[in-house]
Length: 128
Image (cartoon, rainbow, N blue to C red):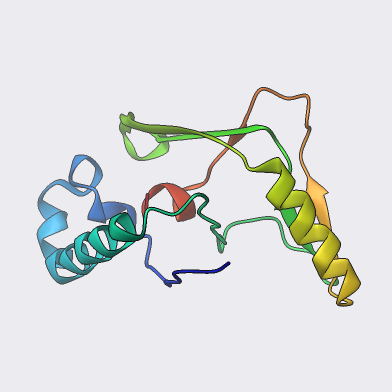
């Protein structure tokens, strides 16, 4: 059951270790993201589904990542100490693909299920 939705920005300067002095230019956005984090924390979801604007795009279908784990860091922005690792809910990923196909919406599992993990992009890392 879907219990919470949000659309969030992802400029790397929101992270103080990346933005430095520039972080002051997005204080309202940072406060809004902190409020959103509090609201999400209250719900305590089992799984979080994230759609990134930097994800793989196909004209007629969408990719659902099928790797067992995710990892990412902000190293490309000079802050490799900001890092996350997550397990993927593979049964949910498969169910999304199956339900999408049933509804005529093209979807497929992307990634290597035998690979250790998939590298997350900043469109996912910044909001996290």
